[in-house]
Length: 131
Image (cartoon, rainbow, N blue to C red):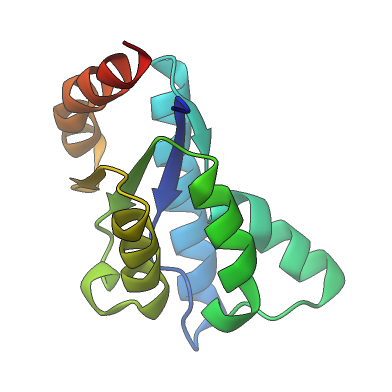
């Protein structure tokens, strides 16, 4: 099983400022996990600049197939609980895909303390997948 971590979070919003703020918060969270030695794939970190550069849609329907492929390559799905995570169509779909694939899903409170709080749990999940 893969040790790659998929970092899900809410992104879509009518206000581009909210999307940009979420993008920055997600990047910060991903950077902490990477600093702690995890291999993280963040669809928002990857897709946001590509969508901006190419004028691509930012909605879940456009990114669904891509996200499903990437979730399948990962060993665990993290859900960064930024405001709106619990009503996000994309996050709900990503969780559903992960559950269908029988991947562990871990909910991550925002902020450094929340990230640090799940770090040991994430480490245990990935270590168990390697054995």
